[in-house]
Image (spheres, rainbow, N blue to C red):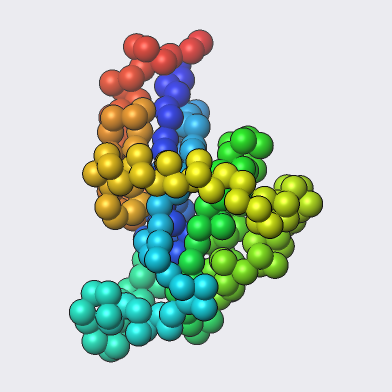
Length: 224
């Protein structure tokens, strides 16, 4: 008997803990399969919605935003790098020098969801890699179009979206929906529209939660 779960992964492509959390969640889903399956939906959240087009130096941004020293920011980044390595995600600390606006990336992810679960997940993971591993600018349309091409989506369609305001209102509506629901930090992993797991949790935490929630949901969602 298989239990099917719906998972909304609320996150930003410039959130390091989102990269860690997604990688850990995928590992947990692999552990619970085939007893538990899940449909993933990637939902938009901007850590820095007012970020200027030219971006901001990463260290300067972190020290100003969180009131920490540059040394503390570097220490935190190394801790994040190690957490990422532990779950199989590579952070290129020497490459990621700036924080950028991510709204256009979220517009493309909204479009990708309309194309299917697999294309949206592939694009999400490619954008996380572009920023955190390769140090690329996720507001640069060339970077976004390369990511689209890399996962096999239609680059002409993506270019048309980027050159317009298509899906802008839909994306903002979803962002508002989650912030109004009380989501103010990410990743926020919402299972079956009612169970919230916050933060980039270890694989074991996600696995335990998935099994518990699937067990509770099984009478309604079992299939032979």
